[in-house]
Length: 226
Image (cartoon, rainbow, N blue to C red; front, side):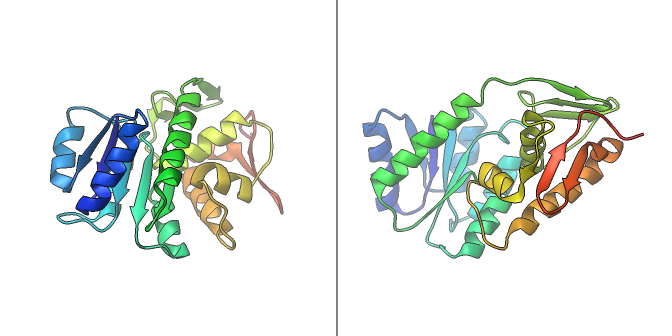
């Protein structure tokens, strides 16, 4: 199931028709309030979200989706007439999985939706990780240090899982940007550094597992330093 939140009648009808004609079950909403009522009953596989909406700004909706345990792992693709680099960066910072600027080609939209759904399906095989005091279960979106649950943002959690999947391997900032945010932004490697810093702080002693490799990037080790 795909949810589309778009207040423009023409765009909403066009996108809904394009997705359903490709065999993708889609339900559309013109207002955030109707969307919130529906998502309480059924969590979708993907959300297409306009930014400039009546009642509530799309970025605020995105933040709520990515901070709620039931919906934090649902991929969200932003649709917006705002197409500057800073607008895209802001969207990805809040947890967007993709960003499509208006006007867009319908076939490209459908292709990117399918690609995101495929990626979501390929990520269904999860593992549990236990290293020293750190425990992470990607499937349950659970992180604990010395048995105490730790609350992470969506991006912080994705970075941690990415490092754990590549334990002992140094990942560059560009690799993390591409893998987590979906795009590479010139001059935006600081985004990764900021997230790593807050991630280490939240993990307390286990934060020492995340090592900085000067001039390259970051890796996670298999033991906590004495």
